[in-house]
Image (cartoon, rainbow over all chains, first blue to last red; front, side, top):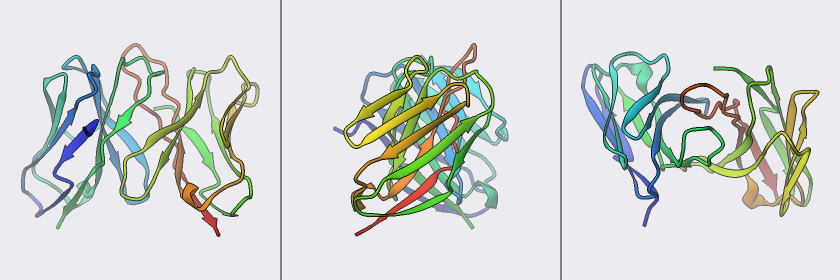
Length: 114
Length: 114
């Protein structure tokens, strides 16, 4: 009965490849997020979706494309992977997007680009 | 994103001691002040949060103190335990007309020694 799940947990790939990370939440939340955590543990928002609609799109290379097929899923596709994309990617969800709602995080996907 | 300045970067406290982590923000576009806790290999999880209409909130051994005039809020961990060893983030979400992603500080790595 995991609240926010991500697959895969680990992803090792070569530069130039395309990869996807999947996220699912079973909390009934209407807002989902992607965050990136770098090697220094700095966490930064990438995207946010509310009811399948993109509401936050931070300065992220357009090689990153989120897709939300329904309110419970938010996937992240990355084209032409670069060394600098190596990081831990966290999916999160909340009920409401007005900022004062607790965000629930998944376990993270550690992406290593070689 | 508006920036928050978190200090110290790392902290070592003996078991039973008090851990204090500070967060300063630069403008008033925040109306919710959460602290998130992250254990190694896990996603962040909400620990405690405060709204600016109160100056202090206590939940068990964890207390948030809020100083609106100084634009600072602090996390106090009383009777620190080895199980509190984790990375702590202040993460106030800035108000905007769209979504409210968490705006993470750079984190404080807390080690509680036996």
